Length: 158
Image 1 (cartoon, rainbow, N blue to C red):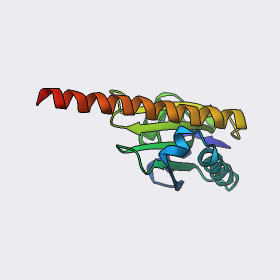
Image 2: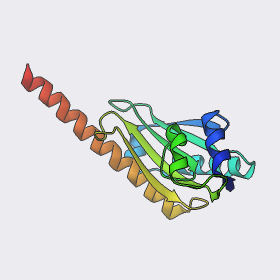
Image 3: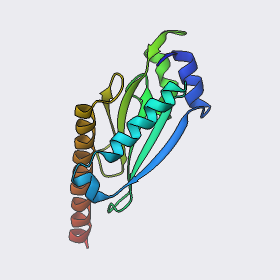
């Protein structure tokens, strides 16, 4: 879907986009089951076909800590929360293509508690879905490792 940069920014800032959420189990994530990515990418495809921007949150319900993944129809590798920053990368009224990005939000992932990856320039292919779930698993495993290190450090401090 093509969109004018200013319109994109305004729609995101005003909450004028479709939000959907899915729950995933840790087992599905660790086994790299594609159902959540496939369902999320189908939702984004449907929303874009209806002229709507789209954000699908995938929440890991049984993780040891809060961790969420977001598939978003975006114009740049910035989360929807930072939509006001798109003005630094595009000209006013510039027509841009939406792409599909995967962002991870978790307190234990890294110093910024955030990571974003470009998944697709259009519809998500099976190979791109496999890549996305692999990224999700890797980000979860990194977060788990950091979470466990924090617990060990707290125990040693006592």
